[in-house]
Image (cartoon, rainbow over all chains, first blue to last red; front, side, top):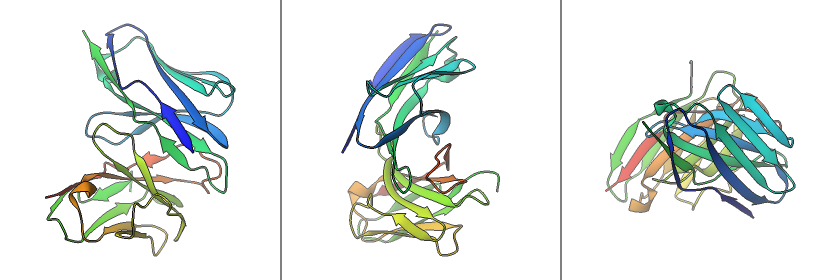
Length: 111
Length: 116
């Protein structure tokens, strides 16, 4: 089975840094996705980590620790448009990598 | 097309009716996924197609749900005898790959289904 856990809601201030955590328990773990989803819109891909460590992409970075079953998404220099839900999703090894999503973290950026 | 297209964008139907939801993938994408998303939840996997065949339909909640992809491109999700609990946003996502080497899935805007 699978269990993916992330905070339901977070609030942060414009210009600040916020870290959204995700823990998982998954048999046959292969990699971890982060998606951004604005209200009423489709999820859009942010990152995919397979190896341990930090991957940076502009203002967004994603970290993975396979041994701890832990990942985080780091958002720097927050902008109002970053207000959205952030979905952590886990892929499993197998004939194809089935992806299971967490419930998402709703981030509100305030002035 | 430029992106994944889903039609209709909104569908209101009466309990017990039959509905079809359509997904037009990005041209050339062989992998296609259907997800269902309820308010405040993450997308829930329903079914995965690789080409024309349903490689994994383990997420379909019951036999009222069925999906096809006859020519390996457009897919239709069919729901019979709809129930109020079926109300959700149905998302389609496609990838250019065999699924064994996952990178990025592109999602459509979804169909918001409301069963009254």
